[in-house]
Length: 219
Length: 219
Image (tube, rainbow over all chains, first blue to last red; front, top):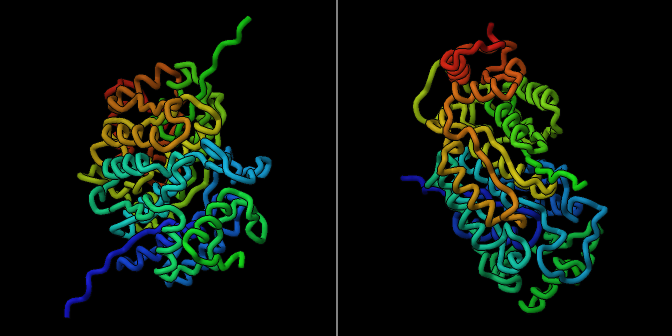
């Protein structure tokens, strides 16, 4: 009997609910997933622990990569910069210059070596109002660059399946796919419980409300 | 009296003679340079020490960034893979998947935060026969991607000034600029002295010969 052809994917996993949904979606699409988790000096270190719990719950392999942004330049890296309460306009202070570029570049390296067919990243529409490296034009350009810059140029697809969804649509999809929301974490602040004030908490609460679902973290 | 407007550049510095020449060229063009050196688990660890010596000799600031490629996939990362003696065809086993993509991505992050106007990388024509991430098409695509993916999209120029030069032209230029070739290292092997057998040693020897200059490392 012929064995089933298996597909492999590298999934960027942050501990938030978007990337957890991307992981469960990749699994549902039949990919054998390798979660790639970054310990990059973020002030909300708990997200690394959450990402590991999510990867374990999903039954996927995972790898934690420690990297640094010693030049800081973001409220997520520098405790001297305050994470604002409420929604901000323009590029938020939580923007980490080139973070998604770096994360995707490592994913590309890993995907090339482990012979994966795809990379999944859980970026979505609500991010790209502020973060340049979450915009559709960025992903399009990254895909072009990857084709030009690696040896396995046509083998690896870079997939951004949540790109055109808002938070409530992602929560509905995650709910269907069985994402363990209780293990996810969205808050930018380093407290034990979600602050309910930063914009990440705001969008999460709004998303759950619009999806007609209850967030296990706050209820 | 008005103070002179200063330009700042991030220069990727590997310890080899190409990136050392790129550093001295950036300096000659009036940039205040910050060398970015990667300790990435390369078997030829001495190149990090060489890079530091070159940065110090040039009087430039430098930063060593430790990153990992735990999935290996290259003779430069995996001691079980032999570095071949002589020239190979196609993509060499010394190719590190996505290495330049990752290096440039970190340079982009640093350049954005320190408000640099330029990034210099010493890739050149002889590299791109084998390494996908040294080809002109790759750099063109990377520049496009960077414009789409960072907040300081139009401020940072990515410069590849040696791209159309061969090794002997680079050595002549470096010689003019006062590059301390005695501090550089090109060999892929981990020995104390250049092996004179790997393709990196081969091209260095050929370059010095064609430039009519003497390599202080071997004479």
